[in-house]
Length: 495
Figure (cartoon, rainbow, N blue to C red):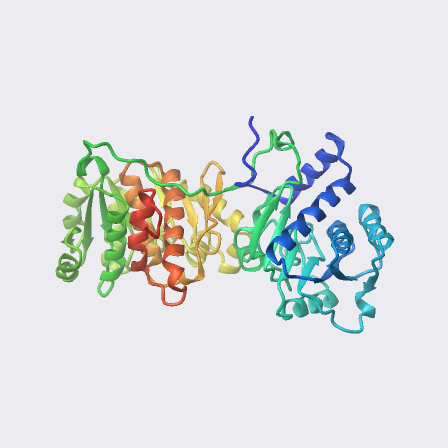
């Protein structure tokens, strides 16, 4: 088994701890040497990011993360920087004690938090309070310290994990350092990439500490980061029939926008034909605004049947509603047995009438819809997004895209992928409708459910980032159409 690419492989805290032990026991690399390498990588990161910094404040906890901080302090002093180092406790043991001794031997002075008289003047703060092992809220004195660091107005470099972030689940049980940048060591931790993780990590770097690839042999990542991908070029002989026929079903009264966004996104990502089944009153506007969509007014299941017979793939849910009309179309669509992407009220109806899918299906819930599907609440879903996504995929026999910061893609077989792109400006109406259209179009072009979910989620998020170059606030779903087309063709989003 080849070692996974460390740039994309994510692991649990226990797995990373096992890598540390393997490096020490099997490769003969002392723990203190790993700490020294981490400190050197951290200082290099600090000087690269803030080359004008001359004063550094380092905040050290009692464990090995604090040990990293002590050695950063020793190296920073050696490099001619002014270092103020504050320990939250006088306790230290093992390699952390050895690192503290090395800092003091080099002429550094350790100040205790409880004795700190004034706030240190610093150009950069280094967070070495708690590492990846913390899964509870920091105690009151440290929580107050974290608040002061966050409010200092100075950049913060976090070592391995921003203190207060659960590196497994991506949640902050209490106060957490809001880092400007984080340098992770040894291997990627999955909690840094979803939930609250992206909000507190800042710019993320990974340094594997010069460990050999053999260290990761035989270890399956807990999740993988999506890579930037595009669709392959089409043969010169391609025609519309080769790229699939997608039928988009939805658009209750007053919801024509949702169904148009979904259909247009599908066209922009390359579906050969896109039909729309919606309320009759929406058809004139759809024909005028996007004539390439084949819009049909349907008043119930009987009118939907001939459209289903011509379709290859379905996208069900945008603007569908949960009243009698929407429910009847939803039920008829699901019984057609076609591959499908299911979103919005398509998911809310599924929560009311659960079923397990026996065909290619992609579900795209946000945390509220995920909570309804699982019979729980949003807080429980967000408390461990990895568990929630995997449970949804297993329960419904479908690939699931759990949307949000660090969207997750889960397969019923246990595979998990994490989307590293996207921005807060995408939290506006219609973005989910666009994603449904993208995934539906990829299914129509022959992608498997897993491929469509991974590629579609990545294209959607990257298009959102391209559109946000003009600012996140004010971003609307239709802004994604042009970058979606370019990215799906492998072009620069800003061409």
